[in-house]
Length: 214
Ligand SMILES: C[S@@+](CC[C@H](N)C(=O)[O-])C[C@H]1O[C@@H](n2cnc3c(N)ncnc32)[C@H](O)[C@@H]1O
Image (cartoon, rainbow, N blue to C red; front, side, top):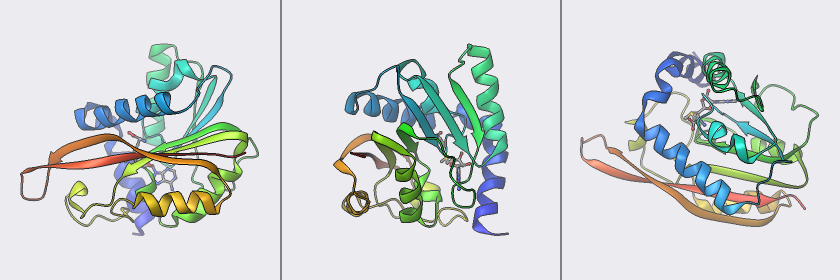
């Protein structure tokens, strides 16, 4: 099994219980709040969430944006999102299966591309950042949330499909500048607390990096 198919199997298997986790709900609330506090969101914006899972972040931002394409590689995650949108009458979220590490990017352009806790599951992050940047409309915003560099404790040890143990903010910001993006910033969006491998509570800071295609 490759790391990529391990990811797909794991997330499909976790989909039905994904929203039961207070840790994940807390991260999603904080990331959605940080995006809304940092960027000038408005109802005319067309957005893409990449690696949306069950859409925890997209659902929270739905009333601040015009339309959200919520994309993920795992069909079971998208099925959960689809059912939630139907139940809540959320008609501006469009679940879509998409893996930009193998699929061609859609021709659409977006005013906002956001992603939460997905980058560490992507092997070639600079390549993905290039693709996400190409998908931005002129003036469009990129907003990326993920773990700061950590020691592997967040996932409880080595795990197939976890390619990065968080990121150095400065490294990520440099990659965004390399792509010609402007207004590059990073801030702490949240500090997730969960037991480390020794069972003791540990803090895992999560950043939100933002940048703009001028
Ligand atoms: C840790 S989960 C985060 C989900 C969601 N953003 C949240 O905050 O609840 C990572 C998500 O990335 C998705 N993913 C992993 N690799 C992917 C890829 N190559 N393309 C698209 N989605 C991917 C997984 O299926 C999973 O839903």
